Amino acid sequence: MFIRNESFNLFLKLYPITAIILGIDLLIYLLFIVTGTWSLAPYFALRMFDFAAGSNEAILNGAWWQLITPIFLHITFSHILFNAFSILIFAPALETMLGKTRFIAAFLGTGIVANIAALFLEPAGFRHYGASGALFGLLGIYIFLVIFRRDQISRQDQTIIYVIVLISLISSFISADVDILGHLIGFLAGLVLAPLFLWRKTN
Image 1 (spheres, rainbow, N blue to C red):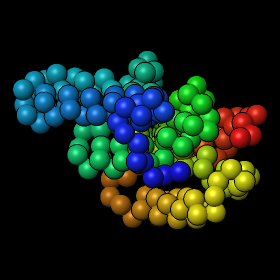
Image 2 (tube, rainbow, N blue to C red):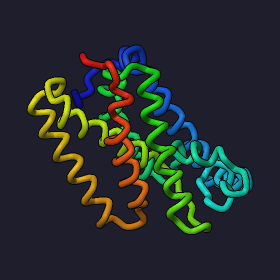
Image 3 (tube, helix red, strand yellow):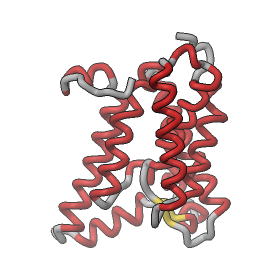
């Protein structure tokens, strides 16, 4: 379930939504590297960050798109590496299970719920970015599956899911500069909304 050994072309064919998400994440990251880190267009990089990062103050003043755009925004190598690798590992199996439309609804939906929670539970000056809320949403769906639909997941994969979720939740509390609330709300959103995404998906 979590081992990726497909060729690049087969991966694109089997998991087009996952590939698009990864492509957008990497493209935006590289754009920041070229314009910001390499200082080729620092003003453009700053304006792009201000446009895409989730700012509670800006959202309250009408920048509604910032409930979505932070999901695709990463500006450090460690951040994009961890999130892109996590998407590569966890997203394909769910895209296959849910289908393209439900998978993108699950990915974006749980990420948006996490961002809405930040809007109401964090101070006005709070800013956030990254796909972590959506990734934890996927983990929440996996936990729902191993609890209520365990016949669809092998025992070995069930154990892997439990271990990964436990490690991910623990690391959220001990790692510096982590949006703990976003992780927890994303996870709970995936767990609670999973029946909607899995409705009538019995195989």
